[in-house]
Amino acid sequence: MNFSQLEDGAAINVSPSVLVDFKFGNKRRNRPSKDYDQIKASIEAQGILQNLVTRPHPEDDTKLELLAGYGRKDIAIDLALVEVPVKVLMVDDREAYLIHMAENIHRTDLSTVDLAMAAQEYNTMFAGDREAVAKEINKPLKQVNELLELMKCSEKVLKAVEDGNNKFSFAHALALAPFSPTKHKKSYLI
Image 1 (cartoon, one colour):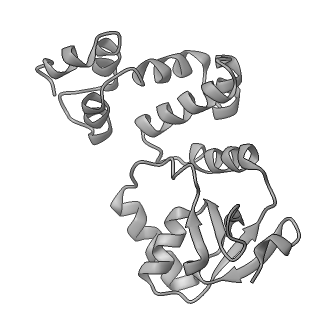
Image 2 (spheres, rainbow, N blue to C red; image 1 turned 90 degrees about the vertical axis):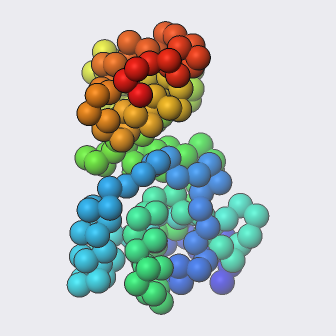
């Protein structure tokens, strides 16, 4: 099927095999296995109730680029579902990216690090306008500033925050943020 010939907003069923990851990648770093298992049980019992959001693949009209619904797609593959419901949007890269980000930003189980990464990407998109970022992610400006500060931390520090290391908190990470990654390695907490 040539997906680029569809009308904007078309709702169709497709094989999960035609879905290709968004070219900018999935912004969510991890998903709690408990949530995945609950969603899987729900889909097994009732099917997929919310369409995955896609657009025609920019280089292959026979594929769809997945903008939102990575968990549902993965579960469909795990359950060997033959078809999944999708909504096909005719959007450019910027609009596709905003849709992808919005899908993840409004999740209640989004980790602090995932939220910080989203804030950093929105900060780039909005040319450093942190008030616009705060409005977009629906967080106070103070929290946006802290999230952006967190992104100065090394991967090791971000992982400790993400893992919920008992000895290491978001406040510890913020205290380390101004220092070089070399200093992060010397922290006795991680």
